[in-house]
Amino acid sequence: MLQRRPFIVVGCGGFGKEVLWSAKKLNAAQPTYEILGYCDDDPAKRGQVIYGAPVLGSLEQVDAERSAKPCFLCAIGNNQIRARVVERVLALGWTPVSIIDPSVIVAEDAVVGVGTYVGEYSILCPNARVGNHVIINNLATVGHDAVLGDFAQISPGARVSGGSVLDEGAALGSNAVIVQYKRVGRYATLGACSFALANIPDGATAVGNPARVTFQRAASTAVN
Image (cartoon, rainbow, N blue to C red; front, side, top):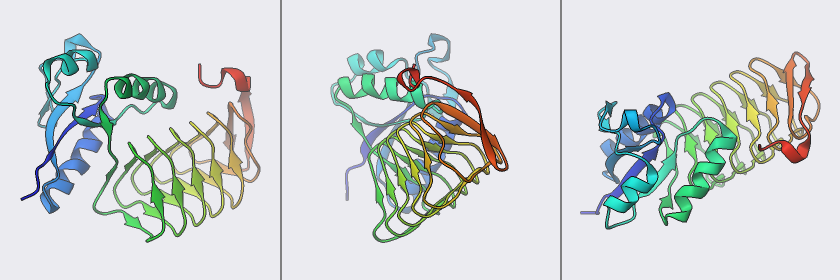
């Protein structure tokens, strides 16, 4: 019998519950993870039970209390904050793992990095390339030859068309679509229900159909 890996969800908000939901379904198919609970920096949440799992405390508290290093997935929706928290967790020596819901359709040559979540009924098409610590939420599609950089995020129902690129930290809102072979820049956002026909610059927010840039941060401050 395979030994289950101790697993902690970092972040106990609504998205943390979705990650735990998929982890439980993976365990039902084949016991893989010993689900320990959540880590969260809010001391008021310590000891709460959320979706059947306890909030254990902050990262540093839990690390000090454990003799063995767990594996983890960072379930924080904000891409910038997730990147900073992942840096903290990796410094503790914990191991990132990806959680891909059993309902997901994955092409045989699609590649998914570490620490990435792929939610219910999503599709990863042939030669899709998904980076580390990415969020692909429920019912999303990543088209053929598309590339998602580290810490990118696709909200429910969003569509990344074939050959398109989401740079590091880029985000698509719910039901947003980017046309084939276009790019969403580093920590840029395509708003919910928007349709991008052109590239979106680093740090920009674009909304509408067709999407137009409504806000622009300097690229140097895109992750602050």
